[in-house]
Length: 206
Image 1: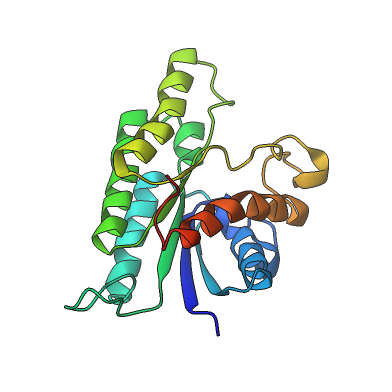
Image 2: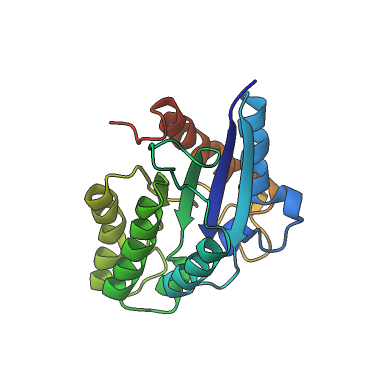
């Protein structure tokens, strides 16, 4: 019997599944792919449309307070709960709102720190400032994701909407939010990172 796995998907509308039925959203689709690969996986959808990195940090703190066993270990160092992983998919709305990339980086760092304190390996999902008119803003925004991944030693999924944004067959009416096919593409893109982490006992690939 495969060991149960709990995966937390913390994000914004791209994770929540804006405009989609819950079972068509990215977390549910990723769960199906993991189960098809033989993993007894549960993917918790902690996405909220419109959320920023600051909002995600507040929600993660509240969720962890309600779930004190998530990712913790007992005194022997053995896990007190099923192995856990987390996907952190936040920052798109910070960019759309023109929020300070330094503040955004600080919030994401706090999120990764909270997960590290719980011994929860994280996958950092990146975004790109294709929306930005200011090249300096775009440069600062794009650079923070790889910098954070290196700082915390976590794998980086470079761009969650790679090949999706602006593709009518993969998006809703706004050419931005994934439709069911786009959410499935997201899940397939995330799958190698998650499987790589599992293959290393929860640690990121070297």
